[in-house]
Image 1 (tube, protein in one colour):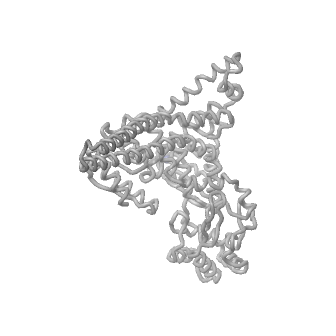
Image 2 (cartoon, rainbow, N blue to C red):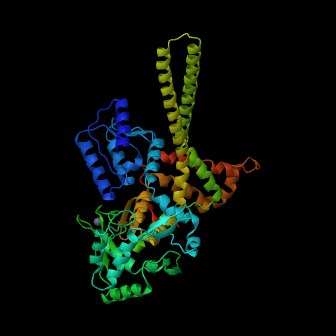
Image 3 (spheres, protein in one colour):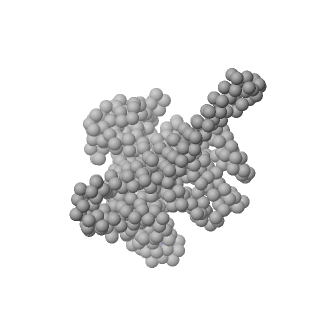
Length: 524
Ligand SMILES: [Zn+2]
């Protein structure tokens, strides 16, 4: 990316740093490739004792909180180490304010636009979409999305639809295994929505999917679809009988939902996943000495995680509104900074404009020579253009700081919905990503899951605990009124008891280090 490289080189020069090495990650690289480059960069930085990492913006750099945690650890080890995120106007270091760290975390959360993709149809309403005959998911292989936001529909892809049709028909001949078909589909160029190979187990699902005869399956029910079918009922029936004839092929190479995400509470070993008779179990890998024996079903743990997503939902709408406002205000520092930068830039702009006016007057009065005028004119015009560009940039930054808090809030409130939608759409990678965004330090102790919320979500969770609990349930109602102009001056007791609430959780932003494990058993 020459443009990005130029931007970063320019920045690096202005700051007076010497470039040791440039690492670039192409936007289209696979997740694994991106991780490889991230790791290679980190190894290089550690080996050569590099003090400063300069990046374009958060979303080019990290994939999730895990990378972010590695980054914090690296910064914590040495006060001189810095991370510059040029487009985010952020410099992180050991002594960064918690505000800046939170800002970084939120940028990492939103680094992936998958949340927008996933939530688009959640917003519109899945039932409405289905009733109109459209699947509230991304298109399946062979189709593409067209249409405006909120009115997106699926139509056969001009290149991939014929390829997909051909492979479905090939399978119907009974001469290919599912694995062979998966390989042939890959060679023909068919990919998942994220650009990867369509896994054998997914191909098996697709072969059974009446989507290709124009029907939508959602929540176990079949709906008549509005999209154009790729194959006939006859071909579909043949495929089903070929599948049945092969005695439901064993799908052993399975990508597991929680692979690498859980640790054994006793020995810290990774939880290993296995499938037995169609049921997925997790257990300690026992690489170290460990007494944990229990095998736990994946679906049981998933249920507990969904409860965890629910744990972020605020029930009191008045408090919710107020929290949204507080989250916005939590970016007040950043907004203030942008506001004062803007003020300064406006001043400089009017100064330059005055100079240009004076220059013009001087020329009219023939006080200056033409060559001098031309030179000064170019200089001031360039200065003016630079200032106008800077104003634009800071205005954008100010607005984005303003939106961040609100976006985070909305994600937290819809996390469960978004997760379940990803599950319904067979988007395993996205389910995994959402889990690792929201939860951290997940451990298993004889089948019982424990976890913490990631820093940005912990803030919201703490607010939920303060307001949803039975102790404050009524208080929330009464307390909400205290945010209105004081109509009830006599309600001083409620007001008093609510007051400590705000400082207590706002202060928590600084205390991400306390290791309270939120066991699922502890909240109902
Ligand atoms: Zn263990």
